[in-house]
Length: 87
Image (tube, rainbow, N blue to C red; front, side, top):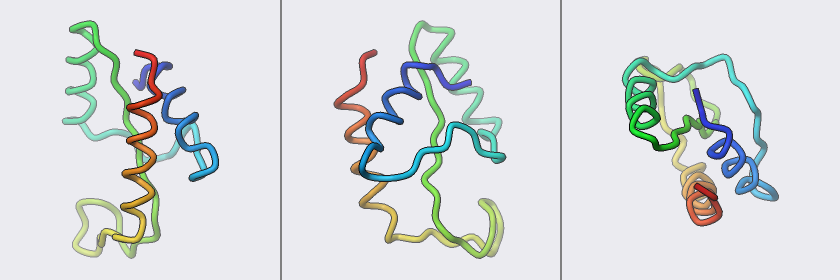
């Protein structure tokens, strides 16, 4: 589960840049959730975020295709979150 501090930083960083949805039907994969739990167990904070775009297929599908046009927005969003986070 995403820590509230991480969720808050991601939400604040997206202001004026992109739409934020608190939940999405796609959950974190097992490997991502295990990594997040290990970080949290060691006293850190963790979060899982998805940068959405139109794609013909879901992740791990032969039809999946990354929309490179969303990458600059994703990088700006994560940079803002890291710089503005209050960990």
